[in-house]
View 1 (cartoon, rainbow, N blue to C red):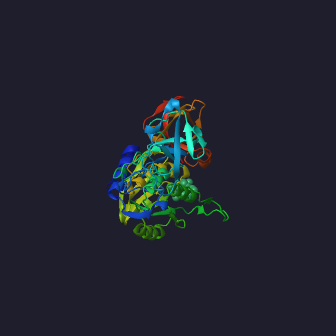
View 2: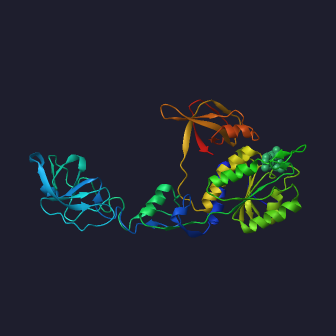
View 3: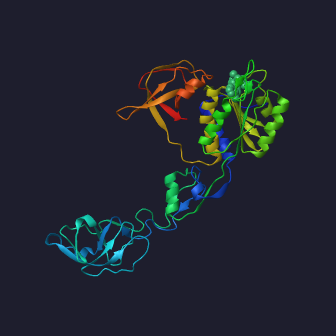
Length: 405
Ligand code: AMP
Ligand code: MG
């Protein structure tokens, strides 16, 4: 096989994935705002209108002129009309006058202050009160949240419900977002049987497909799974090339180690390009990354926990990069709830359970079953816990980064 980086460190691998993903940035499309959750924004969003769009009342009460407020001596104002939300009653408030107003209703001309209903006595077409509301009280001014023309979102941001709400408040029915990567998922191995079918000698059920499909769907994608591939290069090659010519990303699992039946590295070297093979991480050491046809190709190791760790780290970095996600994902850290002896040099992901103490501090209890085939340990846990390069004895209270799954 030709020359490519091998046995590189985890940070080196991350850097390569990011560089390749950046160079393969997907195009953009306009989508309905109501369907854009979880997408990555591909254009700056400027406010076509101010927010609020007009001066309006913050409370149910009466709109008045602050110049009329008498304070101690008591104020009495004549009610000249009603202004509810949703239209303009065309009122003008003159000296000694007020108008009934509801929350969100536009402020009538002449009024500059609102007094809440609970603070006034109403009698025969007028109101009386003894307190003195501050000038401008209970008014929401046009543009106080967002000024017209102001940029409120930048390309590369994740569209959260709050951001979609902001876009909606600005009247934007469509947004330009990065295209979602299309993802083809392959499991490989002669030993695999689909759940629901009888298990023969030496066979195991295919557990990685649901793991991978679930992890991808959790990223908001709609991945496509292929029937599992046998360990036969003549069968593997056409199927992978076929998928790689139609999809943005091909993810396989299994067949990337140094075993007799691990055909994927040679296939990728021959038919495509390897960007790296083997990363000094645990689990996930045989991870393979390259390009095949028009697709980015991620060859995950076969053990389920390796799939989890490599997908959550490299897979997510690849998907983020392809979509131009510029905002770093929020990071979380927790204190170890048990000591851990790390005897090797590689970057390691343990599985762990996150707990929040009475004091609000997060702690994480590493699962003792740390071998990469121990699916139960992953199922009983809720985070991956990252231990960076280098052997080290971790003590209770040492802070580590955690990644939810
Ligand atoms: P491999 O790298 O292909 O030798 O796979 C490593 C280990 O992961 C072997 O024990 C495989 O049986 C197991 N494995 C591979 N693919 C799957 C899968 N889809 N579901 C469950 N286990 C798998
Ligand atoms: Mg295999």
